[in-house]
Length: 351
Image (cartoon, rainbow, N blue to C red):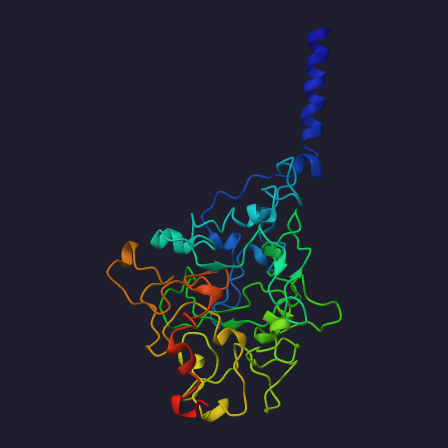
Protein backbone atom coordinates (compact mmCIF):
# COMPACT_ATOMS: atom_id res chain seq x y z
CA UNK A 1 0.00 0.00 0.00
CA UNK A 2 2.72 2.54 0.83
CA UNK A 3 4.47 1.56 -2.40
CA UNK A 4 1.33 2.07 -4.50
CA UNK A 5 0.63 5.40 -2.73
CA UNK A 6 4.11 6.61 -3.60
CA UNK A 7 3.50 5.82 -7.28
CA UNK A 8 0.24 7.80 -7.18
CA UNK A 9 2.02 10.82 -5.66
CA UNK A 10 4.70 10.70 -8.36
CA UNK A 11 2.01 10.53 -11.05
CA UNK A 12 0.23 13.57 -9.64
CA UNK A 13 3.47 15.58 -9.51
CA UNK A 14 4.28 14.70 -13.13
CA UNK A 15 0.77 15.62 -14.26
CA UNK A 16 0.83 18.98 -12.45
CA UNK A 17 4.33 19.69 -13.75
CA UNK A 18 3.07 19.27 -17.30
CA UNK A 19 0.45 22.00 -16.94
CA UNK A 20 1.68 25.31 -18.37
CA UNK A 21 1.40 28.05 -15.77
CA UNK A 22 3.45 31.11 -14.84
CA UNK A 23 4.96 29.28 -11.90
CA UNK A 24 6.03 26.12 -13.73
CA UNK A 25 6.52 27.35 -17.29
CA UNK A 26 8.70 30.45 -16.66
CA UNK A 27 12.40 29.93 -17.37
CA UNK A 28 14.77 32.58 -16.07
CA UNK A 29 17.88 31.07 -17.59
CA UNK A 30 19.36 33.53 -20.08
CA UNK A 31 19.54 32.41 -23.72
CA UNK A 32 22.58 30.28 -24.47
CA UNK A 33 22.83 31.15 -28.16
CA UNK A 34 25.39 33.61 -29.44
CA UNK A 35 22.98 35.90 -31.26
CA UNK A 36 23.69 39.27 -29.67
CA UNK A 37 20.67 40.67 -31.48
CA UNK A 38 18.43 38.72 -29.06
CA UNK A 39 19.09 41.37 -26.44
CA UNK A 40 20.70 44.22 -28.29
CA UNK A 41 18.99 44.41 -31.68
CA UNK A 42 19.35 47.20 -34.20
CA UNK A 43 17.12 50.10 -35.14
CA UNK A 44 17.08 50.48 -38.94
CA UNK A 45 20.75 49.47 -39.28
CA UNK A 46 20.78 50.17 -42.99
CA UNK A 47 19.78 53.80 -42.54
CA UNK A 48 20.98 55.31 -39.29
CA UNK A 49 23.02 52.58 -37.55
CA UNK A 50 21.54 53.44 -34.17
CA UNK A 51 21.69 50.61 -31.65
CA UNK A 52 19.24 50.38 -28.78
CA UNK A 53 21.08 47.86 -26.69
CA UNK A 54 18.66 46.38 -24.16
CA UNK A 55 17.22 49.88 -23.64
CA UNK A 56 14.49 49.90 -26.26
CA UNK A 57 12.91 48.17 -29.23
CA UNK A 58 10.98 45.73 -27.07
CA UNK A 59 9.03 43.04 -28.89
CA UNK A 60 7.37 39.80 -27.90
CA UNK A 61 10.11 38.03 -29.88
CA UNK A 62 13.04 39.59 -28.00
CA UNK A 63 14.64 38.68 -24.66
CA UNK A 64 15.64 42.20 -23.69
CA UNK A 65 13.79 42.47 -20.37
CA UNK A 66 15.73 39.66 -18.73
CA UNK A 67 19.01 41.23 -19.81
CA UNK A 68 18.52 43.56 -16.82
CA UNK A 69 15.65 42.17 -14.73
CA UNK A 70 15.24 38.88 -12.90
CA UNK A 71 11.80 37.96 -11.58
CA UNK A 72 12.83 35.46 -8.91
CA UNK A 73 16.62 35.66 -8.71
CA UNK A 74 17.06 39.37 -7.95
CA UNK A 75 19.10 40.08 -4.78
CA UNK A 76 17.16 40.63 -1.56
CA UNK A 77 18.64 44.09 -1.14
CA UNK A 78 17.98 45.13 -4.73
CA UNK A 79 15.33 47.31 -6.32
CA UNK A 80 12.97 46.87 -9.26
CA UNK A 81 14.10 43.25 -9.72
CA UNK A 82 17.52 44.50 -10.83
CA UNK A 83 20.82 42.65 -10.32
CA UNK A 84 22.39 45.21 -7.95
CA UNK A 85 21.37 47.15 -4.87
CA UNK A 86 21.82 50.56 -6.50
CA UNK A 87 21.02 52.11 -9.87
CA UNK A 88 24.70 52.81 -10.48
CA UNK A 89 25.59 49.23 -9.59
CA UNK A 90 22.98 47.91 -12.01
CA UNK A 91 24.25 50.12 -14.86
CA UNK A 92 27.80 49.03 -14.17
CA UNK A 93 26.78 45.40 -14.55
CA UNK A 94 27.44 46.15 -18.23
CA UNK A 95 29.00 49.61 -18.29
CA UNK A 96 31.98 48.81 -16.07
CA UNK A 97 34.57 48.58 -18.80
CA UNK A 98 34.85 44.77 -18.75
CA UNK A 99 33.02 44.35 -22.03
CA UNK A 100 33.41 47.80 -23.54
CA UNK A 101 34.91 51.18 -23.05
CA UNK A 102 33.18 51.76 -19.73
CA UNK A 103 31.72 55.06 -18.58
CA UNK A 104 33.67 56.29 -15.58
CA UNK A 105 37.27 55.29 -15.07
CA UNK A 106 38.22 55.36 -18.74
CA UNK A 107 40.90 58.01 -18.26
CA UNK A 108 42.44 56.20 -15.30
CA UNK A 109 42.38 52.88 -17.16
CA UNK A 110 44.20 54.42 -20.13
CA UNK A 111 46.63 56.78 -18.40
CA UNK A 112 46.86 55.88 -14.72
CA UNK A 113 45.77 59.44 -13.86
CA UNK A 114 42.44 60.25 -12.26
CA UNK A 115 39.97 62.46 -14.10
CA UNK A 116 40.31 66.17 -13.43
CA UNK A 117 36.53 66.81 -13.49
CA UNK A 118 33.36 64.77 -13.75
CA UNK A 119 29.65 64.53 -13.09
CA UNK A 120 29.98 62.87 -9.70
CA UNK A 121 27.69 59.85 -9.49
CA UNK A 122 26.60 58.67 -6.06
CA UNK A 123 28.55 61.36 -4.20
CA UNK A 124 26.81 64.72 -4.61
CA UNK A 125 23.41 66.39 -4.73
CA UNK A 126 24.72 69.90 -5.40
CA UNK A 127 24.30 71.40 -8.88
CA UNK A 128 26.69 74.25 -9.76
CA UNK A 129 24.60 77.00 -11.34
CA UNK A 130 21.46 75.15 -10.35
CA UNK A 131 19.90 78.30 -8.88
CA UNK A 132 18.42 80.87 -11.26
CA UNK A 133 20.76 83.53 -9.88
CA UNK A 134 23.80 81.47 -10.80
CA UNK A 135 24.60 79.96 -7.41
CA UNK A 136 24.59 76.27 -6.52
CA UNK A 137 21.38 74.40 -5.73
CA UNK A 138 20.80 71.31 -3.62
CA UNK A 139 18.63 68.77 -5.42
CA UNK A 140 17.08 65.45 -4.43
CA UNK A 141 18.23 63.01 -7.08
CA UNK A 142 17.34 59.34 -7.71
CA UNK A 143 20.15 57.64 -5.79
CA UNK A 144 19.10 55.95 -2.54
CA UNK A 145 20.85 58.76 -0.65
CA UNK A 146 19.37 61.46 -2.86
CA UNK A 147 22.61 61.84 -4.80
CA UNK A 148 23.02 62.14 -8.55
CA UNK A 149 22.85 58.82 -10.38
CA UNK A 150 22.65 57.49 -13.94
CA UNK A 151 18.88 57.62 -14.36
CA UNK A 152 18.73 61.31 -13.48
CA UNK A 153 20.00 62.03 -16.99
CA UNK A 154 19.37 58.78 -18.87
CA UNK A 155 16.15 56.87 -19.61
CA UNK A 156 16.99 53.15 -19.20
CA UNK A 157 14.04 52.05 -21.35
CA UNK A 158 14.63 54.66 -24.03
CA UNK A 159 11.33 56.44 -23.44
CA UNK A 160 10.88 60.22 -23.86
CA UNK A 161 14.43 60.88 -24.98
CA UNK A 162 15.90 63.73 -27.02
CA UNK A 163 16.19 63.51 -30.80
CA UNK A 164 19.11 61.43 -32.05
CA UNK A 165 22.23 63.43 -32.88
CA UNK A 166 25.64 62.80 -34.43
CA UNK A 167 28.45 62.57 -31.90
CA UNK A 168 32.16 61.84 -32.18
CA UNK A 169 31.86 58.30 -30.92
CA UNK A 170 32.06 55.31 -33.28
CA UNK A 171 31.53 52.18 -31.22
CA UNK A 172 28.94 50.15 -33.08
CA UNK A 173 30.00 46.53 -32.88
CA UNK A 174 28.95 45.86 -36.45
CA UNK A 175 29.95 49.12 -38.14
CA UNK A 176 33.54 49.89 -37.23
CA UNK A 177 34.59 51.89 -40.28
CA UNK A 178 35.19 55.49 -39.25
CA UNK A 179 34.10 58.17 -40.05
CA UNK A 180 31.43 56.39 -42.13
CA UNK A 181 28.77 55.32 -41.53
CA UNK A 182 27.55 58.10 -39.29
CA UNK A 183 26.27 56.75 -35.98
CA UNK A 184 23.41 58.78 -34.52
CA UNK A 185 21.98 58.22 -31.07
CA UNK A 186 19.92 59.97 -28.41
CA UNK A 187 22.39 58.62 -25.81
CA UNK A 188 19.25 57.74 -23.81
CA UNK A 189 19.18 61.36 -22.64
CA UNK A 190 15.91 62.27 -20.98
CA UNK A 191 13.80 65.15 -22.21
CA UNK A 192 13.27 65.97 -18.53
CA UNK A 193 16.36 65.44 -16.34
CA UNK A 194 15.53 65.08 -12.65
CA UNK A 195 16.36 68.62 -11.49
CA UNK A 196 14.52 70.31 -14.36
CA UNK A 197 12.01 72.95 -13.14
CA UNK A 198 8.47 71.58 -13.09
CA UNK A 199 7.07 74.43 -15.17
CA UNK A 200 9.72 74.13 -17.90
CA UNK A 201 8.87 72.54 -21.24
CA UNK A 202 10.46 69.25 -22.30
CA UNK A 203 13.82 69.59 -24.02
CA UNK A 204 13.56 67.65 -27.26
CA UNK A 205 16.99 68.45 -28.74
CA UNK A 206 20.44 68.21 -27.17
CA UNK A 207 21.95 71.66 -26.74
CA UNK A 208 22.19 74.52 -24.26
CA UNK A 209 18.60 74.02 -23.13
CA UNK A 210 19.41 70.44 -22.15
CA UNK A 211 22.38 71.54 -20.03
CA UNK A 212 20.24 74.34 -18.62
CA UNK A 213 17.66 71.83 -17.44
CA UNK A 214 19.97 71.38 -14.44
CA UNK A 215 22.37 74.33 -14.69
CA UNK A 216 19.62 76.89 -15.22
CA UNK A 217 21.71 79.67 -13.69
CA UNK A 218 24.33 79.28 -16.41
CA UNK A 219 21.96 80.17 -19.26
CA UNK A 220 22.22 83.68 -20.66
CA UNK A 221 19.69 86.00 -19.10
CA UNK A 222 19.50 83.93 -15.90
CA UNK A 223 20.64 86.84 -13.76
CA UNK A 224 24.12 85.53 -13.05
CA UNK A 225 26.70 88.34 -13.47
CA UNK A 226 29.61 87.84 -15.88
CA UNK A 227 27.97 84.81 -17.46
CA UNK A 228 29.20 83.98 -20.97
CA UNK A 229 26.20 84.24 -23.34
CA UNK A 230 24.93 80.99 -24.86
CA UNK A 231 22.24 80.25 -27.38
CA UNK A 232 19.07 78.79 -25.87
CA UNK A 233 15.32 79.24 -25.94
CA UNK A 234 15.77 81.48 -22.90
CA UNK A 235 18.07 83.81 -24.82
CA UNK A 236 18.06 82.88 -28.53
CA UNK A 237 20.21 84.33 -31.26
CA UNK A 238 18.99 86.71 -33.92
CA UNK A 239 17.92 83.84 -36.16
CA UNK A 240 14.48 82.30 -35.67
CA UNK A 241 15.98 78.83 -35.10
CA UNK A 242 17.92 78.14 -31.91
CA UNK A 243 21.26 76.38 -32.21
CA UNK A 244 21.51 72.81 -30.88
CA UNK A 245 24.32 70.26 -30.97
CA UNK A 246 22.97 69.01 -34.27
CA UNK A 247 22.36 72.37 -35.95
CA UNK A 248 25.28 74.59 -34.88
CA UNK A 249 26.91 75.77 -38.11
CA UNK A 250 30.45 74.64 -38.81
CA UNK A 251 33.07 77.09 -39.94
CA UNK A 252 33.27 76.72 -43.70
CA UNK A 253 29.89 75.03 -44.12
CA UNK A 254 28.01 72.05 -42.80
CA UNK A 255 26.23 71.70 -39.47
CA UNK A 256 26.56 69.91 -36.16
CA UNK A 257 29.44 69.40 -33.76
CA UNK A 258 29.90 65.64 -34.18
CA UNK A 259 32.94 64.26 -36.04
CA UNK A 260 34.37 67.68 -36.82
CA UNK A 261 36.28 70.39 -34.98
CA UNK A 262 34.97 73.13 -37.29
CA UNK A 263 31.78 73.51 -35.24
CA UNK A 264 33.76 74.68 -32.21
CA UNK A 265 35.22 77.69 -34.02
CA UNK A 266 33.06 80.79 -34.45
CA UNK A 267 35.36 83.28 -36.13
CA UNK A 268 34.89 86.98 -35.49
CA UNK A 269 33.26 88.31 -37.60
CA UNK A 270 30.91 85.35 -37.97
CA UNK A 271 30.69 83.61 -41.30
CA UNK A 272 27.99 81.67 -43.10
CA UNK A 273 25.27 80.21 -40.91
CA UNK A 274 27.01 81.40 -37.74
CA UNK A 275 26.00 85.03 -38.26
CA UNK A 276 23.68 86.26 -35.53
CA UNK A 277 24.18 83.19 -33.33
CA UNK A 278 25.76 82.68 -29.95
CA UNK A 279 27.70 79.51 -29.08
CA UNK A 280 26.04 76.65 -27.21
CA UNK A 281 27.34 75.07 -24.00
CA UNK A 282 28.84 72.08 -25.81
CA UNK A 283 31.12 74.30 -27.90
CA UNK A 284 33.16 74.93 -24.75
CA UNK A 285 32.29 71.81 -22.77
CA UNK A 286 33.00 68.53 -24.58
CA UNK A 287 35.76 65.97 -25.01
CA UNK A 288 39.24 67.47 -24.77
CA UNK A 289 40.51 68.54 -28.19
CA UNK A 290 42.52 71.07 -30.15
CA UNK A 291 39.92 72.76 -32.29
CA UNK A 292 42.65 74.16 -34.54
CA UNK A 293 43.80 70.66 -35.48
CA UNK A 294 42.20 68.37 -38.04
CA UNK A 295 39.62 66.08 -36.47
CA UNK A 296 40.68 62.45 -36.46
CA UNK A 297 39.95 59.37 -34.38
CA UNK A 298 42.46 56.68 -35.20
CA UNK A 299 40.84 54.07 -32.98
CA UNK A 300 37.22 53.25 -32.39
CA UNK A 301 37.09 54.56 -28.83
CA UNK A 302 40.03 56.94 -29.05
CA UNK A 303 42.44 54.77 -27.05
CA UNK A 304 46.02 54.41 -28.30
CA UNK A 305 46.62 50.92 -26.91
CA UNK A 306 45.59 47.31 -27.55
CA UNK A 307 45.43 46.24 -31.20
CA UNK A 308 45.71 49.86 -32.28
CA UNK A 309 48.95 50.58 -30.40
CA UNK A 310 51.15 53.03 -32.22
CA UNK A 311 48.36 55.41 -33.20
CA UNK A 312 48.75 58.65 -31.32
CA UNK A 313 47.29 62.10 -31.55
CA UNK A 314 43.65 61.07 -31.78
CA UNK A 315 41.52 64.15 -31.47
CA UNK A 316 39.72 63.76 -29.16
CA UNK A 317 41.89 61.10 -27.56
CA UNK A 318 39.24 59.83 -25.15
CA UNK A 319 35.50 60.09 -25.69
CA UNK A 320 34.30 60.45 -22.13
CA UNK A 321 32.22 63.64 -21.96
CA UNK A 322 30.00 64.39 -20.07
CA UNK A 323 30.95 61.76 -17.52
CA UNK A 324 34.55 62.76 -16.91
CA UNK A 325 37.31 64.90 -18.41
CA UNK A 326 41.03 65.53 -18.48
CA UNK A 327 40.39 69.28 -18.07
CA UNK A 328 38.80 71.44 -15.41
CA UNK A 329 35.05 71.99 -15.58
CA UNK A 330 34.66 69.51 -18.45
CA UNK A 331 36.12 72.04 -20.91
CA UNK A 332 37.47 71.20 -24.36
CA UNK A 333 40.82 72.71 -23.31
CA UNK A 334 42.25 74.70 -20.43
CA UNK A 335 40.45 78.04 -20.40
CA UNK A 336 43.70 79.87 -19.63
CA UNK A 337 45.05 78.71 -23.00
CA UNK A 338 44.69 81.62 -25.45
CA UNK A 339 43.50 79.25 -28.18
CA UNK A 340 40.42 78.56 -26.08
CA UNK A 341 39.21 82.15 -26.51
CA UNK A 342 40.83 82.95 -29.86
CA UNK A 343 38.88 80.17 -31.56
CA UNK A 344 35.98 82.62 -31.55
CA UNK A 345 37.49 86.01 -30.74
CA UNK A 346 39.96 87.51 -33.22
CA UNK A 347 42.78 89.43 -31.44
CA UNK A 348 42.16 92.56 -33.50
CA UNK A 349 38.50 92.54 -32.44
CA UNK A 350 39.22 92.44 -28.70
CA UNK A 351 38.51 95.66 -26.74
